[in-house]
Length: 344
Image (tube, rainbow, N blue to C red; front, side, top):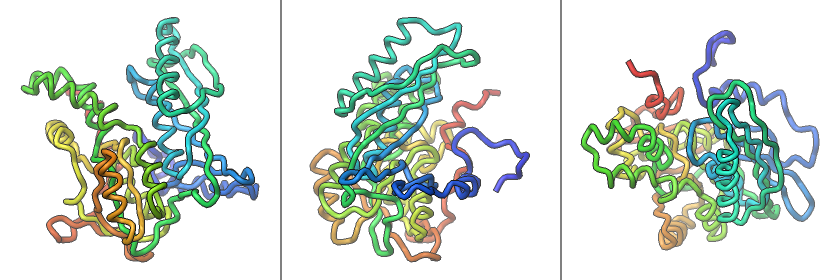
């Protein structure tokens, strides 16, 4: 736990601090099924025969596709709860001194395109030109719905469950490296085709997990799902364990690291296990469901690997390489922040 006057690094609040802060907000409304809780991706409200699932997430980094990003990252966190994303609201803040009608039109076109691709309706929001910004910022809110019996939460993992990873890692991190450091990569001898392919990771394999998450939930019994984002797959696994109060045993060698991702992370000294990993899905399911999930998801174009198992409470986090126990990989901040650090 950081000291109260210690400066915090960019990124998510440290998990112990976040858990301490959220203890103050135990929901008093009985219609709140899932409230503020570290590790959960969205809030859930009881609307009778349906649950309303609500997620809010900002896009604060500089990106030419900010509107598309805002829709997809919020839709992901609704989908991994077993819900269908339905309605999107966006607070769009444009930087004073830089905002133009063309910029606003481009962002709204991106939002409209992303919503159409997911079958989501833009339901409202707010726009303004804001003093003190050096780039656009969007805070998005996605609303979805799910029947009570289809809700999936992070607390559902059970000892004996298998841990699966859908698609590889780190998809988003690979795209960001290629987009932000294209000139450096060209100077290092990477070809134009390789760089373009890595940049296109945002769309192929893609950071959206709505389709594979919904397919997994419809295929067989799934106990928990998670969209690993900041802190990478290692932090996502940690969040799954803490949310359910269970242990984890993971074979780090079984985690599929995409070839382009491995090359780019090595080039900049990043650990791919701690690099922002939107586009993958972590899920836990009973052992009898594993073969069917791997077959069904793979046939649909979503390669899936069994990477570990859930162990009893108190067993802790156990990572293995070459069959031997190694320290669990932990990251105070996402590895991607290293490429944004000031250059000497």
